[in-house]
Length: 248
Image 1 (tube, helix red, strand yellow):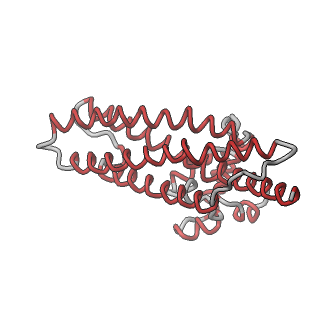
Image 2: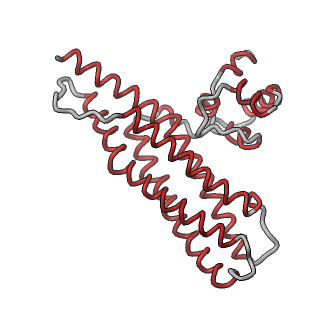
Image 3: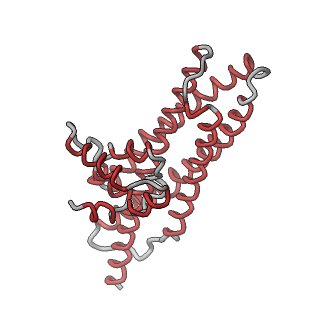
């Protein structure tokens, strides 16, 4: 593939082809999960990065051993939802609860002497509360709707009683909430020095690693939804609408 072709690809297309490329974009602070629609050329220009640097790293990645082990783009929407809901969401809920326990413990022991701790606690509680509501919306409304679309699309005859959501608007709402979630977690990253381990007790070091793993999982989940599931679901809804129009 020529350099021009790579530059014209969107960031999300590059990561979808090989998720290992996400590490390169993280290195240059290029947001492939919320702004995956950006072309590589535009993303580099906006950040003052020479495109050749990233292209060379992507080329070295291709030549390195190993393949894209996480080719989620080949999965159906049903399989994607199962992966997100029962693996990614469950991880988030369990890890967030674990971090809350650490924060409560730290606050009792170090609260008076750690000026940043109260800020971290405040931000994290807002973050986890709003993210849990977001996950509930997906679990109770969005995911069942996409599954129903999938089922309806497979049928030869379609029920005229099928109720469409304002799906495009719903997806945009979910994306806006994803942006807010990453804003929260980035604020925490800044307060704790981007997860650099402090010269403090072992409990702090464990907590920092837990935060880091939570952020990594959050970003992966947002990538799966924004860049893979939502486009597939929008395309699926279009097919169902078309079938219903033909049936009338």
